[in-house]
Image (cartoon, rainbow, N blue to C red):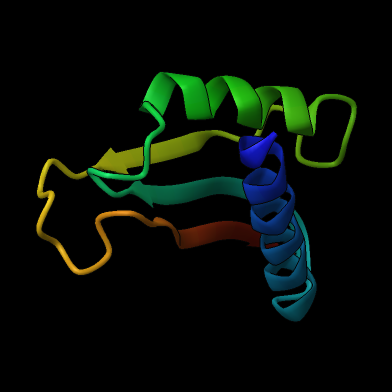
Length: 88
C-alpha cells in the first residue's frame, strides 16, 4: 500500500511537469532509489507499470538509478530525477 501512495505522488508530479512544459507527451521518467528506500528497482518498475496501465503514461520508459550508499543523506528516499517530454 505504501508503494501505491508513493507512485500516485510520483505520477502526479510527472503530470504536473508535463503540463508546465506544455508537453505533447512524456517520453521517459528517471528516478533514484536510495539504498534504504526498501524497494528494489524491479519491484518499483512492476508497481509503476501497474499504476500507469490504461493511462496517458502507459508504456513510458522508466529509468531507475539505485544507490548502495546507506549513509547518503537521502538513503531512505525515492527521488524523481527527470521527466523527458516531447514539446508541442
